[in-house]
Length: 314
Image: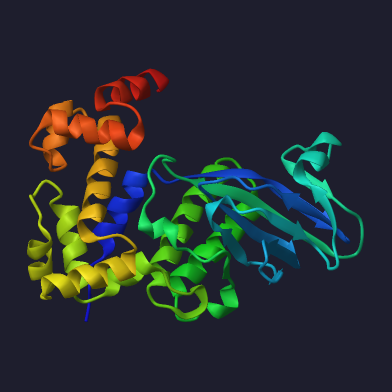
């Protein structure tokens, strides 16, 4: 059964304001490895341009890396990058303090074993948490040789590697956009299982009953949805729909709807020319005071002040 999930995912990523930036190239050699500190609310990535090496995240076993691989590390977890095992750890801040970062290249260690990586992160609106980002595996390792069933992802990784290798005019911007495509493709692929595992929200987008309810909430957040209405859209009983939705996505249906409305309101206040009252109406709030109260409770600032703050920052 084909389920159109593109509009939901597109809406999620545009609302979260996905933005990718590059840190540096890391040229690591021998047994000296770099320990990168935690940094919340970011998905770090490392693209292997040359050589082989390892990445370790928390208590997870070290992951072997080879040329063309892409590793994604959600939620800004601390990690260790190196060319060989066992590793002598050097904190990133210490490596930078001693002058190892120059000309956009971090060069650490000596030895025959070498790995060259392109390192960066994908950031989101830090005030908004969405289930699509909440249940990602601690490490997502994409290998071109294992992507036979996902030729679009294999093509993206190939383009990433080629463009990063050019290092020409405009390459950083192109690489950043390709990385965003790779991230979206990865989360879409999580619904399929396989190498990348399984994500609750992504799996819900493929669920024949839950997907219509998610699309309905995303397409018409202004509607006065009740659990019974959403259950009817899904063709399930009210109790069964509520239990299944909560189990897969991690929050009850109306909690998800409230979160989505407020996230969209935040996006519209930043990006649209609608008045605060119009934004409130578009996001399902007939009462402006009620919208203002909810927005302030969630984000610690009123919608009008938020808009003025973002306008002055731009």
